[in-house]
Amino acid sequence: MNITIRKIAYFFLCILSSPALAGGDHKIFELGDFLLDSGVVLPGTKLSYVTHGQLNADKSNLILLPSAYLGDHHGFDFLIGEENALDPNDYFIVATDMFQNGLSSSPSNTAPPFDGPNFPAIAIRDNVNAGYRLISEVFSVDHIVAVIGFSMGAQQAFQWAVSYPEFMDNVVGICGSAVEYPHGVVRLEGFKSAIMADAAYDGGNYTEPPTIGLRAGGTHWASWGTSQEWFRTELYRDMGLDSTQALVEWWQQLVLSWDANDLIALANTWQGNDVGDTQGFNGDSELALGSIQARVLYMPSATDMYFHIDALRQEAQFIPGVQFTVMPSLWGHSAGAGSSSDDVLFMNNAIREFLQ
Image (tube, rainbow, N blue to C red):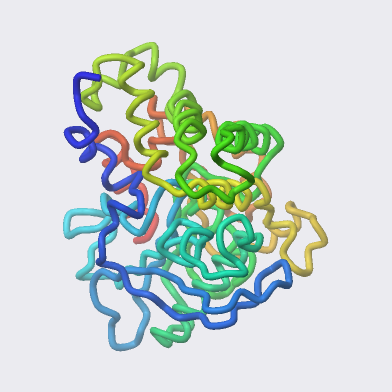
């Protein structure tokens, strides 16, 4: 590999951060004994977050940005700023870290008996309920401007709209869905299997990172993160990489920076996503989507291989008054992470216009 990870790390710094990149800038909300969707009570539960801007006098300017897979509270930094859609002079922006990402309560940072592979199952709804407590208890806010999320953050945004339909005015879901469909479940199973096949993984009871499995998992992401068109046009060169092998090694290093149990636990949450499982809908995702009251900007990438545009278009038809805006990008799923300047401009313009 001719270019080191450090030399190209800036490229994904805002979009695919690891806990190691996050640094010490985040705050911790102590949730205490937290009742999970599964019925398990997780003691000493913690939610990590950061804020930008100031809450105004009538507490009417809060926007929530939940994090994504392989990401943290820096994931939407490219939307935040005076020249961007989310101006801290106008909005009070709260960016949260999902459970299991190594900053909020996770397999890697929780004490026995819930440490490592013993960490309880987490649902998207658990992240949403924790975020609701953060906003209502820490900031004493009972209504917000918007929830904006990418990938698993979009899953959270749609769940917010179902769980708390009157709590927000707007929802923006970028490159994500309200339900995880069978193809995505199988794809994620392949990623998990790559890690777990490493003998060093030892059922999650490893004493040293299962590096062979993590490298294999990184190879998986290298093939899925963008699009076939992206590979044909050699857009990896825009990352400063000179070959597909260099790309594979880049993804391997990224996945190696994460804890294996955290990655698997997050993938389990992703696989189980379904707004229809919200209490009162009896597994009927279409009914759940039909209950949404917030304005919704549904923004897929035209070439996303994780969340295929056809499935998202089918899903969106059940959301009342939805605005379905396709990002015309070759960057696949990574388009929603701000992988190219064109995608960043497109999202900033679309979100700014939608929130006006």
